[in-house]
Structures are given as structure tokens and as C-alpha cells.
Length: 259
Image (cartoon, rainbow, N blue to C red; front, side, top):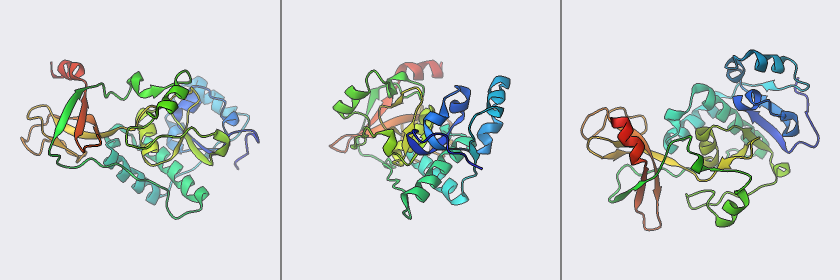
């Protein structure tokens, strides 16, 4: 049985990724109702972490997402380009968050408008930019959150990400994983981060061939559809007001990889 952790907790329904348990986050202060998927618990191998789990002063509900919710977030991850960076457990965490959104928004569907890269674009520009998922430049901490909100650069898809009081949030996901956070924002779902970090912008991805430099938005491709070589790599992409596609490539990292 799920026990409400705290009347003063901000989020009504909080889905917790592995980071919440590994980092010994005080979950009862963040969410009233706490959830995770069984796979998250199974992946926690550290003895100290598992011992803490056995002695939690509150309960976390283990819940499997529906097959429909899992299908929806899987398809969304393929459209946003995050699919190849997400594990089966990650997708279940996302699906459970999505499912709880459906239930608590009292609507038939959760907003999940995705910006989908076009398969072929007449013109594109390559920009030297680091697109590694662990790049600290993609994060906004407590120090520069207000500045980022004021600048309106918490998303680069033409929509600002509003700063919302956690007490107004019905459902959120606690995670520090970049790809999970990126897809959560693409699907208009809320993120709760114990370390005060949130994504600075929304990334969408396409695949670019290192051999012939052609691109494809079909993220499940292994071989280049133009030259046939297995030389595709993931790059972030954005589109400016004129409709020009910009590829954000870290040429330094690309050069090291090719060597």
C-alpha cells in the first residue's frame, strides 16, 4: 500500500528514476505519492543503497506502465531522436510518468507535441557545437536558472519552459538523465531534479553520415541510405525562423572518434 510521504511535499505524484535512490534523495520532501518501476529497483546493485531501500521511512509504489503508454513514449523517443540513448528501463520510467499524466489530467490524451526533423531539407548549416548528452552546457543550475528563464532560452524549439512552483505540479519525474529529461520536455511533462539542474534547451536529433555527409531523420537506421556505409552518428538539430536547418556538431570529438 502506498503511504503519503508528506503533506508539504510539492509534487502530488512523483516517478523516481534510479538517481533518486542512489543519491539518497529525501524523496518524502519532494512527492506526496512516490512511484518507480520494478526494473529500477532491480538495477540497484550497491549494498548500501539496497539497505537504505529496505529501511525507508516511507513507501514507494512499484508499478508497471501500460503497454499503450510504453508504445506511445517509444514512438515519441524515435521522433525526438532519443530512442537510441534510452534503455528499456528508461522507457518504462517515461511510460509510467506519461500514464500518471493521463490519469491526473483527467483528459484522454497528454499533450505530446513533438518537433519532428524533416527527412530532407533543402539547406542545412553545420555548426561546431557539443551535442554530447553529458555536456554541462546543456544544464541550468540554481545559479543561472533565473537568468535562463529571463532570457527565454530554456528551450530552442520556439517555446519557453515556464518556471512552475512544484506545489502546482500534479505529476513529475525525478531524473538527472539527459535523454529522459529531453523527452519529458518534448512531451510537455514535468521534471523534478533534486540537484537543481534542468535542461537548458530541447534537443532533437538526426543521423549524419561521416562518409558522405548526408542526413536522415529515421533514427533506427544503421547504414547510410545514400552511400550504404555504417558511418551514421547522432547530431542535434534545430531550425531557425527562415526554415534553415542547423546541425550542431562537435568537430573536435568527431575527429577523435574517427581516429
